[in-house]
Length: 356
Image (cartoon, rainbow, N blue to C red; front, side, top):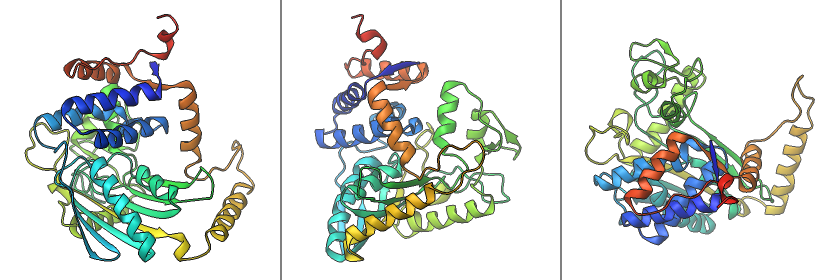
């Protein structure tokens, strides 16, 4: 696989999105979110998503520059209609408003409807942590998980994310789907022609499968069996019902060429201003003590380190900023074609830069 500079890929994203007609402010948001995912090793939610976003902008299933409406129903409750914008754009602007509200009231809740796929939930938790706010985030998505005991997809993979600042540049970031694996990883495996591991998914008949194409026609399995199914239901209620968005099988699939109309994805966030609960320095001291005590515990054989959620992301980001981001040949080919369409040259791989 070829390796690329982070800055080059981000510039490519920007220029392609602007070539489609997206304004500079929104293209910066999307590019930053996508490349941040690649830097942190979450390639399934990175630049590989740009071609499908382009398709959906072109066929008018997503608005390039949405007219987002926000209503403060109380000083701590924000209701957002995303006007069918890309989820990165809708959520970014909503989070900025919600953070201001949390700083005033101590806590804010944001319910978002008429949105679309928003990348990684961790991205928005990181934005909150930069402002010394704690964050809990949820989103629904097109049907991907079979409810416990069922063989057909019903719930979305419905991620849950938490972010807690630590007083340094390594916040605690927890981002997990209520499925045993994010559906994006199966989509990426299908693009790359790779098998998926045992236990990830079932086919249309309810049988275990290692074929990503069969898995996409079937269902992803819930995390922890019945417990993951219950969590997926809870997320569906918060993001689909409480926000007024679509829920379960009524959320349109970005990848389904036969779908028409808006996806109407829903998101839900809770933001907390730590200073309104306790002295921020005492919080930082306490959370550092918690993490240090956890990391100092005796380790099982073969384990060199106990890591807290967010450490791996931060280390991977530092590594890829230095060494570059690898893209599979299939993803690279898609991006080259996309660049040709919008007259944007795809970056030169790092390995070839010195020879040119």
